[in-house]
Length: 473
Image (cartoon, rainbow, N blue to C red; front, top):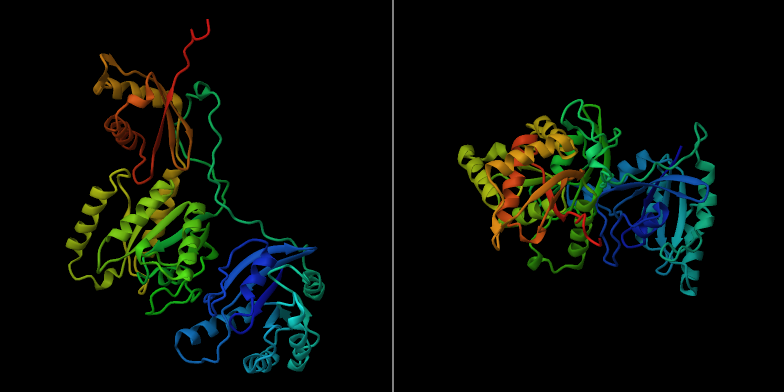
């Protein structure tokens, strides 16, 4: 079993850098600004022979009230209660500070074992701080440099005694979105028996579900409501979430990887370096997601930035589900919903039937309905259509509305097949692909939605020119 390790310490001592080093990839945002990390971040990794489950925490502050710092401290205390061993990190170049001493006294009273790490020991400037670390009463300090990977072997050696023996230690595999499906090599070989539409098989792997939106619309509140625990920080302050926080979860026996993300403002308004990093982290999450829940503030309706985020999700080919939050305080619900649906039909016409679910994350209302829609739309996103029925449908569409005439010759669409799913992608073989107008492509796309039930998911049509059998003869 992996060793659960909580990294704690005052702000700006290199906890997130050590976290990224231990899990072997960049998960947490790292910056010289103190207090970058706010929520506790959990990831698995392997270093040497040791499998780890590592918890990154916010910088410890002497705050015990309901302020943001106090809520961050409670998140750290919760991480400590889940850990097999804690690692207290100090900055050896700065030396031992009064805050380090205060937290050393506090952690010595906790039941969890503690290792003391003196970070930033890549030069002689750290020698004095390394000597001072002995006075904290936590045993011999482990000198390392998380940024440069120096001294990691000593940390692994110190962690080995905490390895559990009730099973073979093995790091959990990294959960990544399976975005590619094999191309149909011989589409004419499709079986005609059975249903014309087949649901994609995802082998029961977790749905990668990201929660996105503008700042302060209730994304973190929704995540906590779904998990039924205070997993991520919430509050009236805008922009609390910085890192993308991933949590393994299940709904109705369906495994889900739920990701809370930082709020995304208009690009012109982003000036702070940390906010740019947070938005970059969110965009990376969108590329790995399969379903994206876009959270709106129901009291404000669908704003321009919401549409920008929605278009980005659609351009990435992901499933889009819109959750209208704070529905319990909306005065005229009929008018609000009519306005949202009208803007969606006007501005997101390329994906007809985007599902819209009114919810109240704070009161936990209609969350089951939201998740039902998420799973159902994900199933549609995986759908595959057999080639035989697809080409019979294409013949009917061509008979009802033939392709236009270009330069005195009518364009011909000879054949069509689905080449991949997630999103549903179809190849259309035609005589002159570049000359087929967008209006006719929209005609085919809407016909696919109507005939095979692809409402609410992006569809891609690839125009290909068929091979000339007489070429080269």
